[in-house]
Length: 342
Ligand SMILES: NC(=O)C1=CN([C@@H]2O[C@H](COP(=O)(O)OP(=O)(O)OC[C@H]3O[C@@H](n4cnc5c(N)ncnc54)[C@H](OP(=O)(O)O)[C@@H]3O)[C@@H](O)[C@H]2O)C=CC1
Ligand SMILES: O=C(CO)COP(=O)(O)O
Image 1 (cartoon, rainbow, N blue to C red):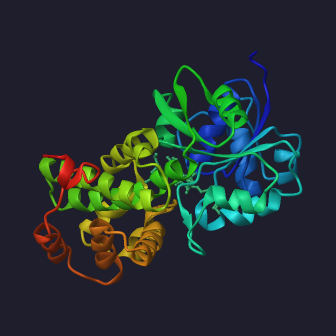
Image 2 (tube, rainbow, N blue to C red; image 1 turned 180 degrees about the horizontal axis):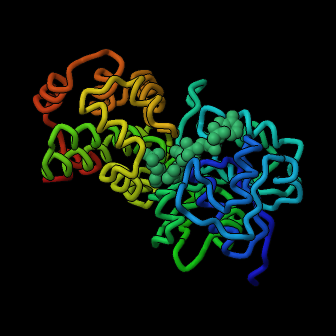
C-alpha cells in the first residue's frame, strides 16, 4: 500500500525546498529544480539552501538540479512552487516534458494580473490533459523544515489527486486535509497576504489586541464575501486554507507580507521595502488585482480599498483608519443578516 513514487518540485525558494525535503524524507524519489545551476550545485553538495533556508539541513536523498528535463522526466507528481509572476512561464516549459498521467499541483499564493487568473487556472490552460490541484494552508517553510507539526489542504476535483498528495506528503509532522473547493482554497491563500500587510502595519503602529482581533475577523468577512461572489464556498474560509492561514500570516513576522506591512507602518517607502525583502511577498500585487476586481464586481471591501489608497494613492494611514472606523456600521455576520439574527 505504501508505494513510493517519483516527485518533482519546481522552484528552489523557501517553500519549494521545504516541501521537497519532506517528500524525500518520506522515501519518495524527489527532485528539486532550481533555475540557477550554481545554486543547484551548491545546495546539492552542501545539503543546505543557504539563499532561502540557511541553517537547515536537507536530507541526503533529495536530488537538486538545474536540469528541468531531468527533474520532471518519469515523474508522477509535480509541485509548481514558483511565484505567480513567473508561474505560467515555468509551467509552459514543462508541457512537453511531463508523463501524460503526471499530476500537477500549485503551491503559489498569488494571482496573475491578466484576466485575474488563479494559478490552477494557468495549469488548466497550459496543461489541459493533466489532473491538477492546489496546496495551501498555514505553512511557513521555516517551520516545515524544522519539523513543527503542520496541517495543509489539497484542493482538487479529483480523488486521484487527493489520494496521491495525501499519501506522498503525510508524515508524523505533516498532515494533509482534502477540499473540493479549489477556487476557495486558492483564493484563501492569495487574499490573506493582503490582510497580513494590514496587520503588520497595525502592529508597527502599536495596535492592541482588540484592534488585532477586529482586523482578523473583518478580514475574514471580507475574504469570504469576495470569494463567494467569485463562486467559491464561503465555508472554505473556516478551514486551514482560510482562517488558518489568515491567523498565521497576520500574527507573525515570519510572514514576508506581514514584514512588508510592518516596515510600511514604520514609514519606509513601498519600493524600498519590496526591493529589500529578497524574497517574494505576493500581497502587494494581489492587492492591486483584488481592488480592481472588487470594483468591477461591486464587492464591498473597505480594508482592501483602505490599504490600496495608502500604498498607491499616498493617503495618510491615520486618515484611512479614521474613515474606516467612522464608516457605515453594518452587521457582524452577514450570512445571518437583519431578518435571521434577532
Ligand atoms: N515561503 C513560505 O512559507 C510559503 C510560500 N508559499 C508560496 O509559494 C510561492 C513561492 O514562494 P517561496 O518559495 O516562498 O518564494 P521565494 O521568494 O523564497 O523563492 C522564489 C523561488 O522562485 C524562483 N523563481 C522566480 N522566478 C523564476 C523563474 N522565472 N523561473 C524559475 N524559477 C524562478 C526563485 O529563483 P531564484 O533564486 O533563481 O530567483 C526562487 O527559487 C509563492 O507564491 C508563495 O506565496 C506558500 C506557502 C508557504
Ligand atoms: O503563505 C505563507 C504561510 O502559509 C507564507 O506567507 P508569506 O508569503 O507572507 O511569508
